[in-house]
Amino acid sequence: MILSDLLYTVAIPLALITVMLGMGLSLTITDLKRVIVFPKAVTTGLVGQLFLLPALAFLLSAVLAPSPVIAAGAIMLAACPGGVTSNAYTFAARADVALSVTLTAIESVITIFTIPLFAYFALNYYLDQGSAPDVPAGAMIRQLAMITIIPISCGMVFREFRPELAARLVELLRAVTLYILIILIVTAAAASWEVVIENFVQAGLLVLTLNLLSMGMGYALGRISGLPAAQQVTLVYEVGVQNISLALLVTLTLLESPPLAIVALLYAVIMPITALGFLRVASRLRGHD
Image (cartoon, rainbow, N blue to C red):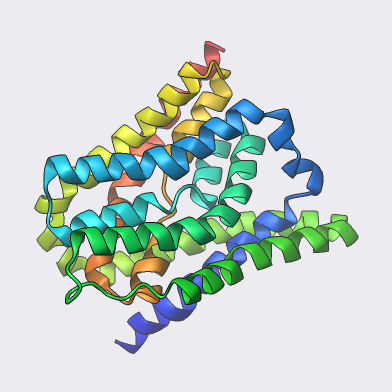
């Protein structure tokens, strides 16, 4: 129990802070100006991630009719888009890493406010007041800011004054943080394995469908917007790959509700398979650009 508490209250927040610090070390003000350079790609990605993705989760929850707690967990997972995981897959697919990092940086600011809103909506819509945990919106906003905006800003300031050292540090963090996140997610899944197995039949179809359709939605948005193939691939991962660690932080650490984390834990098992499988498709798409 003590080990589990340390995982959710200390290890996952520290891992996310490390990831965001590394992202800040890799960013400059010039990078953020890519919003002006890639206005259509950035706008398309943000609309897909911040609005269409939660709407898709809501629609699938209504169609597949899981239990209320599973439906609420799906909304919360969808409210935690992108992050370092999508950046890593974008890099592996040789897609547009600059667009991926820019989207992640912008999301880190916006989701500080949207995640509490979606959490409030999901809990009040799906769960009655007697069974729904309270949404500590103020505390949630403060903690999300501490985990995202502050370390990103610190990293960017450090890079401004010590660019060479920052470049060395970011390579080290890139090599370490993804493995740390994988270990944390696997540990969280192992700690809740019985709960995952018990709910696999009920929630597995929802999670798999959400994952596949969100990846397809990212590709469709890029294609409809007339973006080049590299940016289409980037949107597949940005819209279709969710930040599992952030979803676990919200459900397990901030809301202290293990049942709400079931969807994120199942997603941690399913998503890597589909994301890795798309790498081969991505190479063919880039070849047609």
